[in-house]
Amino acid sequence: MNRFKWNDLPWHLRQGLLAGGAGRAHLAGLAQASLHAARSHARDVERSSLLARLGFDLLLAAWEEDPLNGALAVPLLTLGGNGLGPDLRRALEWLGTYWKPQARVERMALRGDIAGLFELLRNQGREGRADPQLLRSWLETVLVEGDPESLPAVLDHLERFGWQGPALLPARLARAHALAAIAPADAVNELRALAELLPLPGRLEELGHGLYHAGEREQALQCWAKSLAARPWNVNLTLRARDVLQGLDREAVPLAGECSILLYSWNKAHDLEHCFAALEATSPKYLHSARVVALDNGSSDCTPEVLRRWQERWGADRFSTVRLDVNVGAPAARNWLLAQEDVRARPWTLFLDDDALVPADWLGRLGAAVQRFPGAGVWGCTVVDAGRPWVVQNADLHLRGSGPKRGKEDGGQDSRVNPAPSARTGGQPPAVPLTDIQHQGPALGRFDSLRTCVSVTGCCHLFRTAALVEQGGFDIRYSPSQFDDLDRDLRAAAQGGYAVCQGFLHVEHLKRSGTAARRGVEAASSGQGNLVKLLARFGASERERMAREQAARVQGEVERARRELEQTLETRPCP
Image (cartoon, rainbow, N blue to C red; front, top):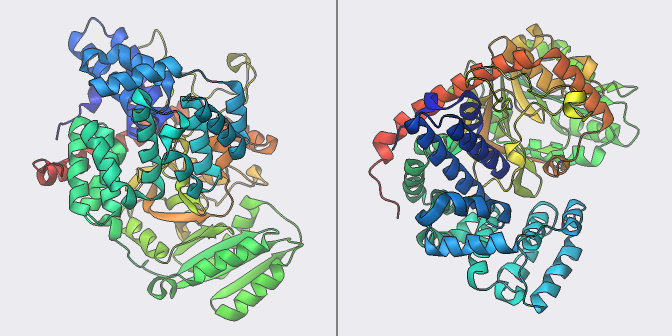
């Protein structure tokens, strides 16, 4: 495998790549930054050439994740020149010609109008027209909102909908991308055919994903090795391949000592039933040392009856409850639970959302994360939509980069990092200072690894009790909800701490809270108020310092993972 010269990159580009080598918008943004840096370093021919090649490859990777996106076609054609194969070139030329986004289609996709989008597709099919924006919008809306079983009605009969000639290749790529998300093992033959037709690194990565789920681990590793030889900057695949090679994807270890599983709930009795049912199905070898404490946050529905029934089922020694007369909000509820004497007496504390559905080995997965990274301050998981495991709500979260600032050297700080609302931002609300790579398309296993980060989701996260108490728990200024868990993680990061995401643990979330984020919808006003508080507490210079520490830690992990991979995988051909 090629060694990647991380330290030769401008700081903002290195930070972005270390946060993730996936996510179509993320990759496209990094491509633009790399190409801009290549122009800025034009006098240094070697460095400029490196950055230009990287920029093109990042742009190509973004398109491989989003093959119906015609906005990427023209720059790829311009940069790729004669180096693009004839089939790929014809497909990109077609996309560039027929990519004509319509506001009507965008609005329909935003409101989840699957039926309306399908009707447009059918009408255009009758007229023999193929519209890449329309197919892209319908396909993505179905994956996020609709019934995946409706996909074959279009994807298995593309010619009927006007997709012929050079238009067929991007449509086939989009079809394979969708199949690799919802049924990866069944997509292996199509993924293999496309990898042979277009021997690009992204095609090999997706083929490896299909082979892995088909039980062909060795062949998957071979494909990933070849993909990484071409794209050594792909942090997500580097860590995933290393962890699969070492068997960490199968590892589950009991926690050393008793664990308090803490839940708080307000008027969600139905979800709570499902949550406890999943919890009860936890493997006994992990659950025997766990004790549940559930707080009823002033519910007016049948939550008290649900809690009473489950306490009788588990026994008062393993399941206890707390009842408050009013809803005190998330941070206060967490602190109330944390203040219980029996909770403080146990070495481990785990907060679980009342609408989270855990798999049977979840505690063992978290135990494996603790064993791998015992020095972390919190251990979390990948959270996915219930019933749609390819839709990721949360995974490893990293501080977002500032981007290059014109007229400054690469190593300088950028004061434009998430400024507060002001004339500088046109009065727009501030942005959450974290990456959102997980919202940029189907996951396809790209977050399946054990890795450090700055924060993990509060939906399911584990702490050492003593450390959490010493840090002061959760700040009630973020009531009633939102950002109290992020604030705690950033407070720890400010003191040199870090979080770990156990990406092989997928927890389903009944509340599809990621939908609004995936559509770019801003949080409610109370959430924005809490975000202003967060950004005031952790200013731009403080976040920049934490981001640099985080990036250095990740770079060390990635370089170590490549060393562990290269001796084993370098000489293996892809099947």
